[in-house]
Figure: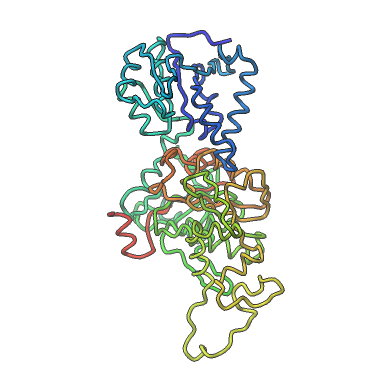
Length: 498
């Protein structure tokens, strides 16, 4: 049974990429009518064999559609949804195939425009466009094509057809998205002014209870407490709850058998505090190139694994195009993922490398007990001279490389999991990752919102900002913005000016 049309009811035509992005999208349009062109079913069929998130999403869409349309009659007439709208499959009778080519019977202004501007109907996108135009010409209600393909949106508008992105998981009001993409190294953190005497007491005692007077902060939000007399010399703090603030607990890391690092700016001090707090199980980080997000995350994770706080460290990075399988290349997962994880390997190599010894000690033989990673090799044997310092840790399983495409169904307890380039994730992929975390585990999602290569997400719709937006304020979650680059002067200037 189809829904009764109303003057306010809209007709939404969904493109394939919307369903692949969110298999639940067909149920997200409230009281309106959702149309799925039959061409979309054909496109979904191409993706369902893939052993990827995209393939899993295609199969999930097929299952849901099969549940919604158990009979041919329901497929033709549509079904009522719990939201009050309806779901229908659209077969465009005006499209005809014969004598080896596609033809179209023009029945309205937009359909005539499709025939004139985009006559190649062998392309699935053009047939979906023709179907949306046909509905707009033959349906009195407002018709909108929903697609994450920007070019298809432009083509639709050229026809006078309304088109928009899928907005259900879009983050519209996150000021941090704009602030972290500015071409400036200035650190912009929220400040709360308090009397100078109370600020001095906070700095010495490490804890303070304040009347916020209408100001609202999220739990585990990082801010600066300052006095009106010296606003530039504030004390960094973390908001707990009920007006309570505490000072930062950690500002350095020390790798056993390797290097020690100190936080170099305010943002890095916030990050170090969150990385070492076991109560924070989920951490999201925005930061441009060179801000130290990967180096500090890998270093803090490695030190905590060395200290036994976690059993192992897992590292992954989103492979682009997102959802594309790593293929049937020879070698282990680590070898297949090596090109993608090279930034993390570079960080590990830097952290595990011993600082250069003074000349008088260069000729002396180092003790095998202090050799980085030596104890991690099987049988406690020394690593080969040609080995990278992190390779024994990979061999022993202390560090594990994970492919996102194979993580579905896993449960990961007592581990610290770093997801690099998380801005390339879709919200559905981010949910899949976060829900893998077991008891005693910690996940760190890091990314640069100015470097998004996934054609189906942007700075407002990717899995990193979606995770932060949906889970911010939870007692187990914290977020940190990094503004200032520390890689080198050249890298910082290039990040801001190029």
